[in-house]
Each structure stands twice: as structure tokens, then as C-alpha cells.
Length: 55
Image (tube, rainbow, N blue to C red; front, side, top):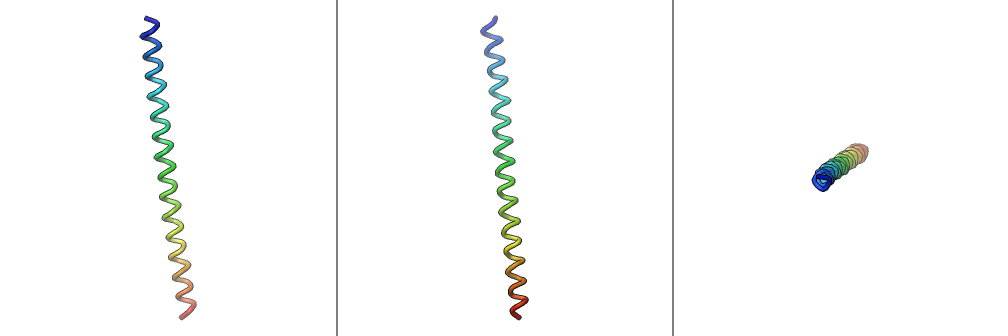
């Protein structure tokens, strides 16, 4: 019986840890994509301002 309980606890903890790792990675990737898009948008706006000032 103890072995069964131990196995169930181990599986439950492992599953929880895997879910936490996947969600953390997903959030990290989402943040990186968002930051990259913001950076590109800011660069486009700066380029447009430079072009506007040159005219």
C-alpha cells in the first residue's frame, strides 16, 4: 500500500511540476514575442519620424 501511495504522490508532483514548467516557458516565450513586436513597432515609428523630418 505504501508503495502505491508513494507512486501516486510522485506522479502528482511530477505532473504539477511539468505543468508549471510548461506554463512558465509559454509565458516567457509570449513575453519575448511581445517585446520583439514592441521594439519593431518603436523602430518603425522612429524611422517614420526621421523620414518626416527629412522632408
